[in-house]
Length: 133
Image (tube, rainbow, N blue to C red):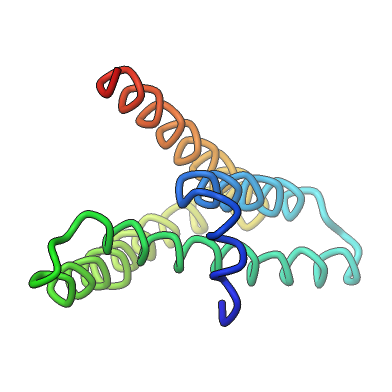
């Protein structure tokens, strides 16, 4: 995250977000089938990749949407929604799914959720491109 400016000078925020979603899909789906402790450790290292890319991308995205005088409020709302509301809802749903389906199925479901996020992002990019033409 410290040197993320190198990444964002080369790739757009949207592309970094999409990359983050796809790495998350791989990680969750691989955790669904993983049995080796070394492989599981490797997959957990990928969490740092997805967290860092998603977090910095979301900060830059919100920054691009808000006017200069509203940037602090924009970041505060982003944090409240993602780390407040988002985590609360996610924990409730994951708790239910864990108790209902178990650990490994929860990993697979998480992979599909990440895939859905990536697909929604790509669809919104296509709609934006058509709207600007």
